Image (cartoon, rainbow, N blue to C red):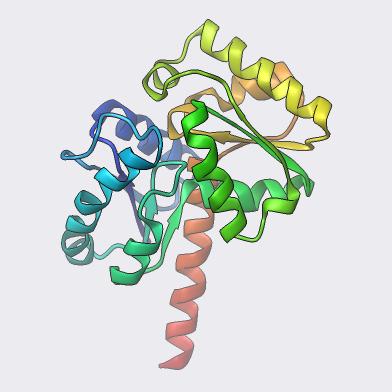
Length: 223
């Protein structure tokens, strides 16, 4: 099966990091990563998301020609999910969507630790549309910009770990990491905080495989 991770922003290094994490999570799938060259360098808030949608839609003919089984929006805001679903030839999921559902399955009550406060209303709106708002204890901004998170380092890990501990004190039983750039930090954060930490990239890679198998099985049975 073939999964294409579509990065709404124009930062190639983030696309490479996402692909590496997705391949590690789903070694049995063929995973490609595409970058929205015309998008903003990072998606920070609804205006950046709106700027990225046209570039994502422009990728769809190539995704069809490539024979993608599932498309994954590699931004925790799930940028353009509705528009892409309406126009794509195959199922489309977002890494935020995947992380929320996985966290809900793992713990019931979960929190999201994200980047800047400007992203919080977008995430909260998504949670409401997915029917998962009641299970979310909090959406906690770390104050770290997306590109700083993507670079990682001890200061970034310590700041995110602090927010995870605060979320645990609020009653969260699992944490969804609220940025694609956090995918390389999951292991360190899980060790520091002793909570299930859900990376949306890995969650989407695994759910994408399940969707491809389910849809494929259904099509075969119908034939």
